Amino acid sequence: MIASLIEPNHRLLQQIFSSLPLGALIIDTEGKIRYFNLMAEHISGYSSDEALDNVCSLLHFSDCHSPCNFLAPSGHHSPYLCQSSLRRKDGSRLAVERGVYPLKDDQGRLIGALETILDINWRRKTSHCTPECLRILSLQNSYEAHLRKMIERSKNKLLGMFDEIIDSLFMIDHEYRIKAVNKTQAFYLDKTPKELIENRCYEVIANRSSRCPACKAPLVFQEGVTQTDLNIPFDNDSRCSKSARENRRYVNIHYIPIKNELGQVHNVLVYTQDISKIKELEEGVRRAENLAGLGILASGVAHEINNPLQVILSGANYLIKKADEREIVLEIAGQIKECAEKMANIIKDLSLYARGIQNQKVSIIDVKQVLEESISMALHARNMQAVEIVRDYQDDGLVLGNFNQFQQIFVNLIINAVDAMQGQGRLLLTTYSQNDFVYIRIQDTGCGIRQEDLPYIFDPFFTTKEPGKGTGLGLNVVYRLVNQYQGEIQVKSRWGEGATFILRFPAGIPSHEGDKYGYGS
Image 1 (cartoon, one colour):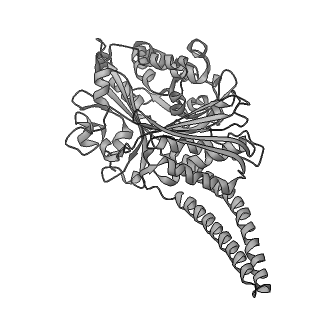
Image 2 (cartoon, rainbow, N blue to C red):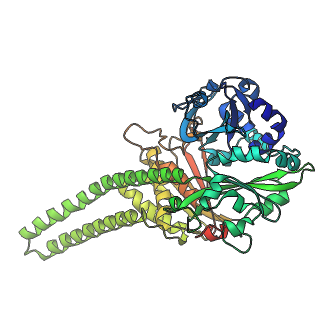
Image 3 (cartoon, rainbow, N blue to C red):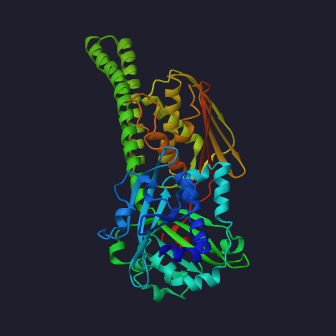
């Protein structure tokens, strides 16, 4: 029965699901795959010819849920969403977020299931996309179909499918009037879908009298290309249901063009993906890295404090014996003073680092000053006596950010460089400005990075260091902090020839404010 519904609506399914940044497949009650979109091909490695009419177990996930069990008469038939690991056709593993949703006919009978697959690393992978990947993504926006008549004809069927998707979906026209909305979006607004239809989205969703300043729907209507906003804070307020008011949510918002038979954008589908749980996991990784960083610093600080402490103790004992010899007393007192000042500076640096874990205040900072203090911090954690530090600071290096978080970025990169050089070599630190951006380059003469490892160095828990000498979290934290401030990071390296990390940040450009999206501050 599901096949009879897919065939006349195949072009519409292509238009909708080829634009979404996730794989989608439809499975009938016999467990056979009846629809397989382009992103599903890209994620799994299987072509649609290989997948169609095959059993759903062709795709092997690490979790125990199977659509075949889901479709069984004794199955629970309730939608579920989980994180899993997909074994691709080539045998490699990919971390994905997986959802399975029931499909029912007008009488409420189960006729199949919709399965969605989202690559958890989609944002980072698309920012470093290969030409082939870019070609596939551009193909996703190339389909055109007779949407207006088909949407009207298939409206109930599509809404039934959308209503089972956990993320929020609604469709607007040129006047920003809501033409279709799923139950999830209505749930967050404490309204029914019928109460939202034909209302302007900015009025009922953002409680505004005019369009939200950051809305990208006008750009989609004009250019006909999918637009995306990432990591947008969403404050649940009195408009939202009581069960959803507890904490701030974070969402990715995708604006997807829906075209008519003339190729003109007739509607925009707004797909809001809740990433709050992913943010929580990232914050857990960040806290673990902070603790790991404090552990490394504590070890270095203990060593640094012990040496001057021994000088102080020895000097004090010597002063007791030589109290009548003024010149010796003055010399030893000077050494005690110098060692005490060194210990005070070490404790001060450690306190600044510890406060940086919680202090998120954003201001205009000078990257040159942050680099200098980062070098001081790294000296406490590593022996750098045999490392030649070369500074090439050019122009102003002012950016908008949190001083301690930028220090965390630079300390991680400097310590990694010193480790790669095994404590001896040349460390070149360069800053310069170009085209309203500030660049920071950190270059070492260490062992470099193998080409096969380069794609994975920013993955959490990936490390090439010996067991016990690296957590595999440092570069992941660096990557996320750089992206948090609208920055970019690039790595150039060859094995045996050192490595160069190039960071780019907007020159003093303020970060996005929540209320410009109409979701609160």
